[in-house]
Amino acid sequence: MDVSSTWNAKVTATTELTGESSISCSIEGGLVFNVYLSETASPDIIPPNSVVGRMVGAFEAQISTRTAQVSGKGNVEWTMDGSYDPVTETISVAIRTTGAGARGTETAQGDSTKSSTPVAKPFSMNWLS
Picture (cartoon, one colour):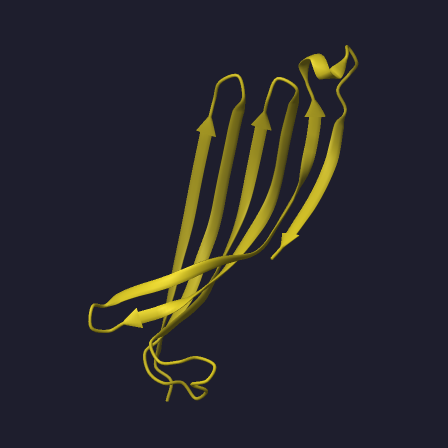
């Protein structure tokens, strides 16, 4: 028989740095993980006292410098695995990114526009690990 405990968490964070260059970023994400407290039906796959989970998040960011403004939205995902120590009641985990993606616009500003009307150029990128 499998004995597991499922945990869920939600995080919302925002940050802003201002000055000659500025950064504004917000992320909202969730974390879901299971703690397996006894041997599973497949101990070769999930040993006893294991922690397995994943985190996902969505972000929005805006970066401004003297020469460009970049704004976009994206997502990021991580996997998590580790172990639960029933004696000390502690969990130790390793978190690894599994990928991220973003899309938005980049607009030239200031001297780099050369007196022309700035045009927002779209961008899109994906990272897989």
